[in-house]
Image 1: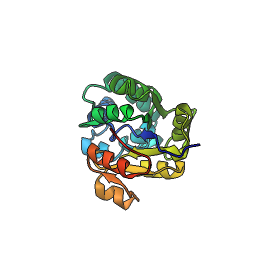
Image 2: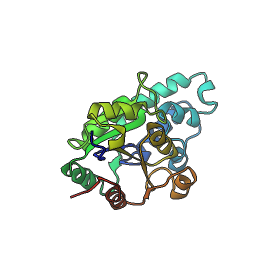
Image 3: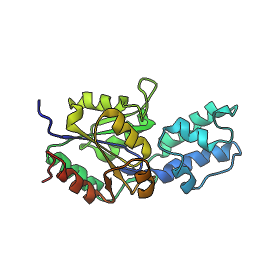
Image 4: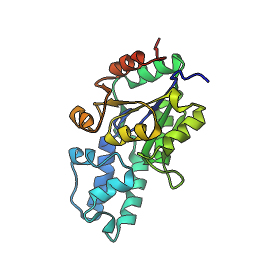
Length: 225
């Protein structure tokens, strides 16, 4: 079998989509409803990356020990499902990059710790027809940094690990790629800074979408039209 890399697996929030305002609004909907302190976008930015359960554990006083934690989580999910596209948009030049990648013969997927319904809905609405494989958090599969979602994407795309590269914006993504046995390109425009990424083991960092293309082109077997 060929070991040519032909598959790009992306994180979603902070990598392809700027979801921070909608996430913050849904967090603060719950905070205000139950009389908890509200959060700034900057503080929510530091809470995301490990799924909505961890997000709400960090946002709510006493976290999962709170008596109404389960209801708060449910309310967040319901509010976010209704409002997940109020302000969310792809980061600059992402759509051109995805189009170029598909035209160059690459298979694309998204794996995310966002809950599965939202991941599939956002990818369908924003990235169709370029990304059709989208896998999020669910009781059926371990969330990142476990490699399970990445392996599920590989299986759906009929790709081997040696044919894949991972693109993400966090320490969770760096660990996910390592656990999956594939190289990682970290992006610095998302929810973590370049300095943070370097401190957590990033070895390839893109400061713009155009940098991703250059990094990919420098890796064996990767070329763009």
